[in-house]
Length: 358
Ligand code: ATP
Image: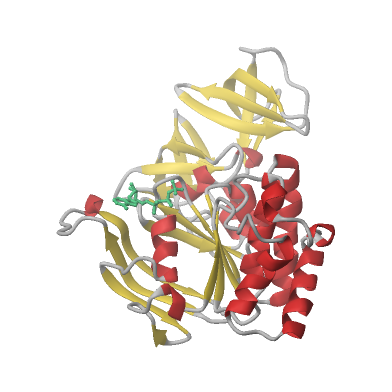
């Protein structure tokens, strides 16, 4: 187990990078606590795999350093870093039995037979594959192959970190939930530092104690699932996390008030920066709909999610989403929207620019 520290990390796939867009990773400073469960979340192409490969040693960064428990490993090859990695697609030996596949990483490190048997049985039980231990891996379903791949990643207790790169991509949707909670449970049992890379917010938020959100080669926010949902520090986080994401509404603002489309709303606190493009950020969950009180809006669309209604409404030329549990009038009817002041924030050039004063 190890604490992992990334210091002034930058990476470019070009030999002679100049402009910011030449960098797949722009400037990363990050510490992953020993024993933590982390998710690295961001859209395709934001640099997640690049970062993972730098940690595992498959890639040497263009600039900056990687430390495991204070030891600089930046130039150490993968086999000297003592990590386990689980990839998107199963990495198993088809000609071996499930037992031998799970035992392989342990035998490779010279573990004795008793230790191998104890760990293989333990992991097989946790992943509910004990009945398959004698089966040859070639005959397994894709789901079970990936379970064995996960098992191979988790079987060693002496690794510095286990890294998962989109490990549930090939798993059947109904099994995904089960495996996700299994992984969380496993983390709680073994306490090894785990980094889980995904572009899927549900996977990130259910697995991790802390989520590192990346966009365009940069870390935009690190926080617990609640923090990311409740108080996004960047409009990207607000929009990327949540379903639907946060409303981002161009506005003017002064003190504790913002104005859009001629209407004034109260903010969580005073604005701290107004030298840039200002936008209100409010989650659909925090916009309430009524028949008589609030900002007048025209009902444009209603989606019944089964649990609640997702409403799209126009205030002038601004589209706003709201979530409500109450029945709604017909399309094009006038409705009224109210923003919860303590959840209404302003962002300046994408960055949170309101503060809550005690
Ligand atoms: P995905 O979820 O699609 O795997 P990602 O977040 O893991 O995406 P990376 O694969 O790290 O992102 O890619 C980051 C950027 O670096 C992208 O613009 C990608 O096109 C570029 N890139 C990745 N690998 C290479 C490579 N070997 N050569 C050149 N550019 C690369």
